[in-house]
Each structure stands twice: as C-alpha cells, then as structure tokens.
Amino acid sequence: MSRLAQELHVVNVGSSSFIAANEDFLDGTVDTDVVNLGKYEKAMWIIQKGAGATGTTVVTVDSCLDVTPTASTAIAFNYWVCTTGDTYGDMQTATATGFTTTAGANQVYKVEVNAAELSDTHKYARLVCTEATNDPCDGSIVCVLGAGRHVHEVPATAIV
Image (cartoon, rainbow, N blue to C red):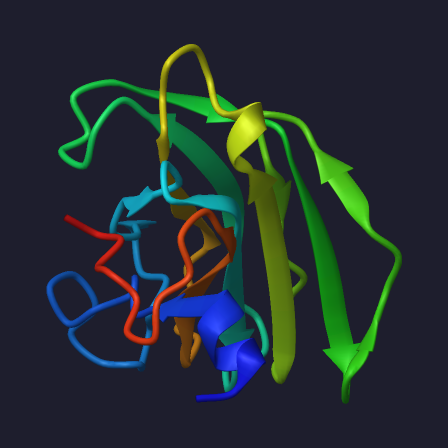
C-alpha cells in the first residue's frame, strides 16, 4: 500500500442513509455522518457539486460530543473554493455561522478542521449543509481524515 493511502482515510459520509441519490444531494438540511477525530488530527470534507447552476447551501461544521451526536456546537473552520477546473482560491476562514456556496455547476469545496479546534472535550465532528436556494444540485460529499495517530495498513472505522 502506498504511503499516501496509509496516511489518508477516506470516509463516505454522504451515504445513502440520508442522500437517496446524487441528484439534489443538498436538499433541505444534510448532516453528514459524524467522524471520530480522536484517531486523526485533521478532517477535510470535500463537497463536489456537479450539475445544478442555481442551488446554494450554507455550510457549517459541528463539533460533537459523540457519534449520536448527543451534543453539538457549530465551530469556525477553514475552506477553499474551486469554481474553475482545479484552480482554488485562497484559504478562507468561516465563523461558526459558516459560508454560503456560490450558485453554479462544476464546483469543489474543501472544508477543513483540526481536532485541536473542537469544542470542550469533543473529539467528533460532522459537516452540516442547509439549503439556502432550493434548486437541485447533483454531487457528493466525502471526508478525508489525515495525520492519523496510529497508521495501519487497513484503517479502523472512523464513523462508529
């Protein structure tokens, strides 16, 4: 296994349990699966928006007490926006109120949080997308966990 594959753990946090299909994947309010940052130092959610030129969503990150989550608190985070090919803008910092995606197709958003920035004794986090402009967008969400505290050939699950 390559070193990169060992260092990064990709999690399908936009599963079929709440997204019926990749069509209109940000319909209403979408809370991704909660990931465990007790085993990793960083999490990056990747929102890939394909077709759908007018729909928008407000993106926030919750610091969570557990996987349920029993308690959650919105926190500040960093993000990058790509609206042309693979050219990203400068890193932006969002407050706990998040940011609104841009209307348009063929976009990628990278949302990053460090485990050290979680609230209180929390070690879990999730991405929350709240539809702002109701117009279907096709796409997907994954979470990439990095800087694992214990690197293994086959990473342990990070969503239970």
